[in-house]
Every structure is written in structure tokens, then in C-alpha cells.
Image (cartoon, rainbow, N blue to C red; front, top):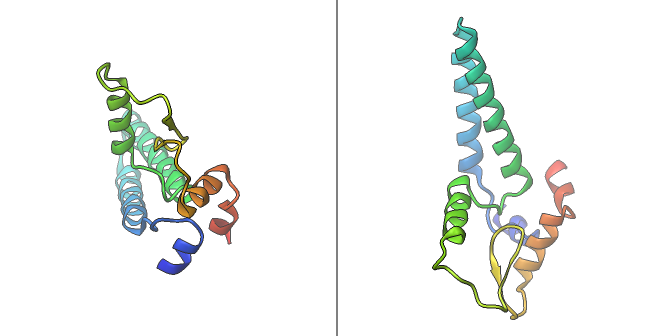
Amino acid sequence: MKKICRKNGLSRWPHRRIRSLVNRITSLQAVGDTLVEKVEKARFVAHIASLRRELSDVIHNPNGKSRKAQEYERRKDSNPGDSMSDDTTLSDDGSKHGEMDLSCFEVLREEKARGSISSLLCD
């Protein structure tokens, strides 16, 4: 599995994160089915929908950062004292790329981000 993931540009397959999200969704559905109050039930349904979106994001972009890492990057970028050099740019996934050549893994990761490797996830 590890060799297949590396060959297709995936740095790692986030099986623990996927399993955790599936377990949380299942648990919330079980508790939500027993609720009588509409307000509480609506809150559970909204949370389950949020977890399903996160699960979909993880499956479609396994190399992507977690929500906590994305929030950290946003906070770090919004700090006024934090500046980047002129030759450094941010890619779609928030990683910094300078003028140096991209490695094979970075090129494959960017292809996957554009959707060219998404067919591997569907098969």
C-alpha cells in the first residue's frame, strides 16, 4: 500500500483520520436518532454534515492539511510581523515554494490537487 501511495503522489494515506471521522459520524447518528427535540436533532444533523464534508475532503485530498493545521497557517499568515520573501509563493495547499525546482512528489501532489489523480480514488 505504501509503495502504491508513493508511486501515485500520496505522501501517506490518512487511514486513522478516515476511521476516526467514520466512527464519529456513526456515533452521532446513533445518538441523533434517539433525540426528540428538533433543535438538538438539527444541531446533530448539521455536525454530521460537517463531518461528512471533512471526510470527503480527506478522501479527495489525502495530502491536505488538517483543519487545525489550516487554521494555524491562517493565523500565522495574518500576523503582521510574519513576512515572506519576494521569491516565495504560496500554493493552493498553503505550502511555500521558492525558485528551486519542485521534487517529483511535489509535482505529483500538485497534479492531484488539480484533479488529475482523482480517478484513482474512485476505482
